[in-house]
Length: 115
Image (tube, rainbow, N blue to C red; front, side, top):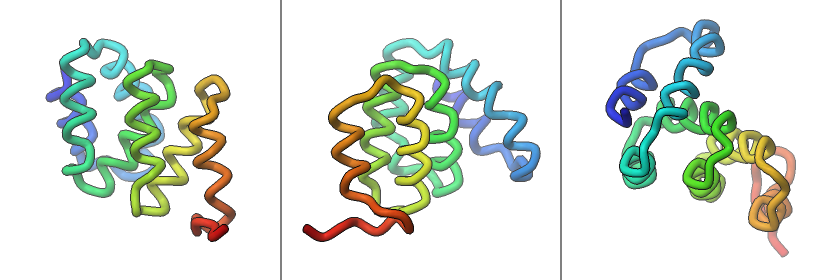
C-alpha cells in the first residue's frame, strides 16, 4: 500500500486539483499496515519537497500514532513551509506536550526563536 501512496503523491496534479485529491491519499493511508508506516517513516526525508508537503497535508486525517510521529519529525525539518504544514496537520491531533513545545519555538514567518 505504501508504494501506491508514494506513486499517488508523485502524480503531477495541479495545485487546484490536488486539494480535491487529498481525500483519496488519506483513504490510502487508512489502509496502511504496520510495514507501510515503517516504509513511510524511513523514506519521507528522501522524497521531493512537493511530495513531503503533500504527505504532511494528508497525514492529518488519519489520527494514527505513526502519522503523529512522522509529522513531529517533519515539524523539525529545515524547510519552513514543511514545518508550518506539519504543525497545521498536528493541530488535528489531540493536544500534546511535544506539539506545544515545537509551536513555542516558532513564531510567525517560520523563524525559530532564539531564547
